[in-house]
Amino acid sequence: MICQVCQAPLPFKLDDGRYYLEKVEFIRDLGKRHFQNYLALCPNHAAMFLYTLGSGDVIREMFLLCDDGKLEIILAGEDASIYFTGTHMADLKAIIESG
Image 1 (cartoon, rainbow, N blue to C red):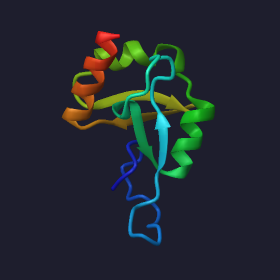
Image 2 (cartoon, one colour):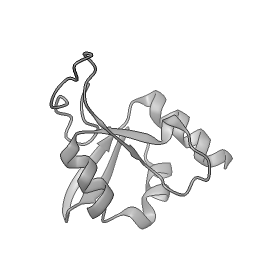
Image 3 (cartoon, one colour):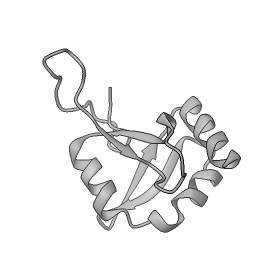
């Protein structure tokens, strides 16, 4: 398991063997909760996404235009990217477009 921003391995495993990750809601105003609308982030990037996302007001539009699995964003004033698998991206786009 890796962080969808830094692509580094998640920092540690829990006692039951699962990787520790921060589950962060990607687009906050979808209305319904969908598991596809969550990101798997390391603790550092989860905090940055929640509190310093510089492109939050246009992230939905940016995501819908993204077609290569790499969404360019700004975190804590720095350029960053969120990486999506093809399936994750396609599923989430379908949810957004149907809502």
